Image 1 (cartoon, rainbow, N blue to C red):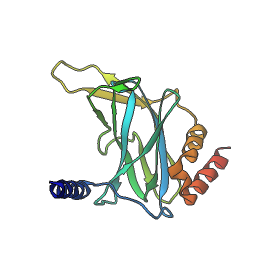
Image 2: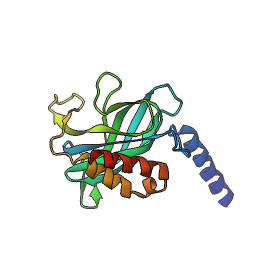
Image 3: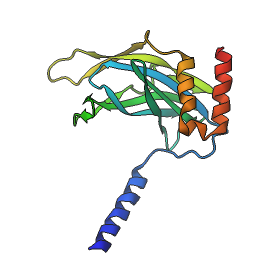
Image 4: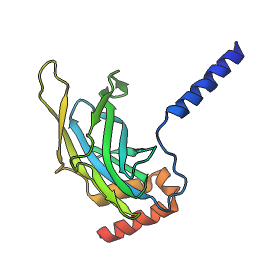
Length: 192
């Protein structure tokens, strides 16, 4: 029985690894920091569980990058320190509705769409620090049997770029990469 449990667990890990389409980055010398902020108070979620950025060009087998995120002011700052040279766009924000520590069992997914608009889009030509924007998400009214929709507009209540970068600089994953710490410090000096 124990052997069967171990084999099942091993098989589950192998399948999970095979289905994963997220690249693990070990060398950050040619990577960039990308960050942004999103106000979610006018949509169904009040707690973010995942944010993804997708690489469109050049084509790659692992186009999705997870982000770190933290609550800041009335929304969430999100960032990654792993984007390579190329075209990237904010892809998906996932979250739940929670009351204190109790969360509903519905996981909402807000897809920002493929190419065609510039919401959360950036073209990285050389390693550096890139701001993807600060946005306010708002539900749109739809028919009873129609899928839910949302709109994204520039946020006027967003924290400053300095506030966002200072928060990102304090994060453990950032501190472990001296190249990224130096890039963020240079950007903070440039912002004044």
